[in-house]
Length: 123
Length: 149
Image (cartoon, rainbow over all chains, first blue to last red):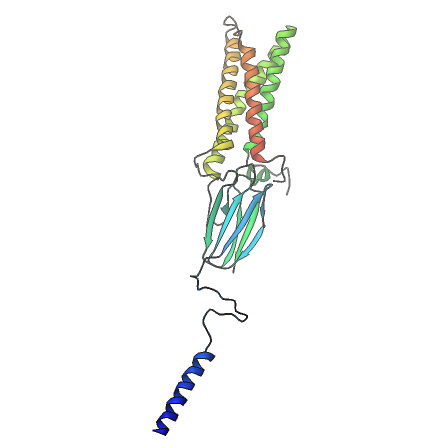
């Protein structure tokens, strides 16, 4: 009986100890916590202003959605040199988005103003 | 790049429309100016100069319209136009129609002097100059001549 009580107390102590020392999920050191979130698609933006793309060269990870926003008073569009993507003509504050699934370099230009060029580098 | 190389002229990476458009604009404005001066001074030589300028302006609209429409059909794949692009196209058509009408009225008078020039011709020419100015302003705005593009 005495041995049984001893064994039982050792088991309870072991279970309690393991429970206290086990790492808690979603808990950071210092008490901060993060909630679990579904995986999100990365996003990036290219501004069109004063007849130029900014940034002129944008480097993003594969799967990123790039959005071009026309801040100019003039209509512009975005056309990939390899015809991978092509927007409609965008008036002021209109947007165009494209998701880059594959790695590579995607040079593009504005068909209305061919001197306006840019490049998206997908890694 | 050689500026006198024919390939440079024909295959340059710029729209020919923005080059050709200056011809009908300049010819029509000068033609109208000569016509006003001819009516004011009564000099036949000025009327002759007006006739040839206005006729040349009407002819020069053809390649200009053609290249403008081709730019729309090819570069923009004929997408539905809106805003400044649509206004530019509409004003360009109205200006061209007016230039053809003025050119035809002058041509008819030159072919059959007994027909005479209509009294409202100068008014038509003045309206034509105004419409061309608006069309050219919109075109210049689109092309970004005042910007780094």
